[in-house]
Length: 242
Image 1 (cartoon, rainbow, N blue to C red):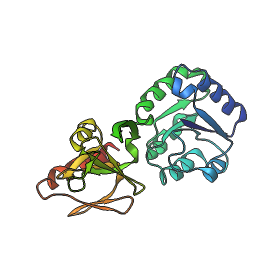
Image 2 (cartoon, one colour):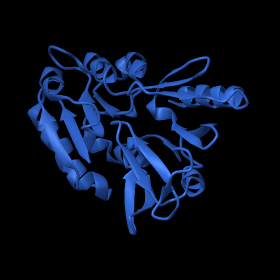
Image 3 (spheres, rainbow, N blue to C red):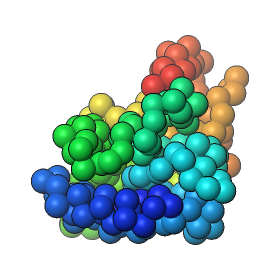
């Protein structure tokens, strides 16, 4: 896991880093931490999905924390942003970018609150892995890499009926795990069957149209007439949760 600490006060950056490294939350304590003295320096190197948590001081010279957060959100909707502030006056403006929380400085006096926010964030940050069988081996795949799953006309893999995992990159993985098993494993995730034996990841969808989904990688998937109303309703609920 990668964490960015953005604060124009050198001591504040170092103090927060030390607190995080000494906290009892193992994924946080063992994470890679990068420190930035300004919003501009962070945005100059920022890439979507590279960081999982950003600690962001609101009151900075130049591009302030709110402006930095807005720039982040234009590229990454899911990154957990935790604001650092010496005043609650900016709270309303900050909520426009859906932060994971606010920490009132100095952080050394808000360690308990910091841990609570981190514990709330972690389930969303750690990857959800899908266990699959592939060529007589057990493999794991981060579900966020999946665009959709199908069986490509009853494709048989390894002498038995398997399924095909289509990645956001456009690659396809033929696996021994059956479509039914994959669907059962993803029952509590943001996947829905929009057509017969076609399971789509809502996170991969760019647009819902009258006849199907347009994915972020440009592919188009059909939605059956029988399932359209239910599928559209579930997709709208997903968007509201996000």
